[in-house]
Length: 148
Image (cartoon, rainbow, N blue to C red; front, side):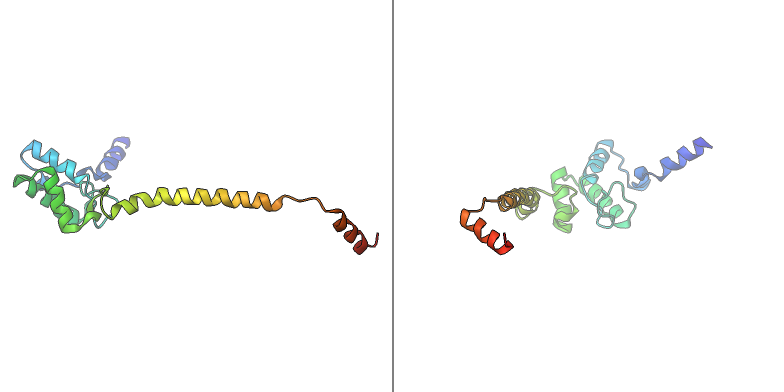
């Protein structure tokens, strides 16, 4: 019973997303294709790479990657071909260039500005809570109002 459960768990993993008819005869090209496929996002599954996804679009992208490699493209040329076709969203790790710099830096900058604002806010509150001593005239006036 345990062996059957283990077998079912293994079969349910995404290890078999790449279909046997997709695998290239050349093991070196197949290894390169697998490596590239782990860097590309499935546009249907969002945060899953195309090597793990069972969607039809992921299969098409895997076949396209293998087709480009068989035609003699380098890894970079293959990735660029896919990016040109599907935009940079297809990359699981976006590049640190152009408009993406704003996206890469916005998180740390917001954290920095939020921290500075929090420090200024706390310092402002501590200044407001400090009580100054009353002058002699103010004490007299309070005592008159209280009838003492």
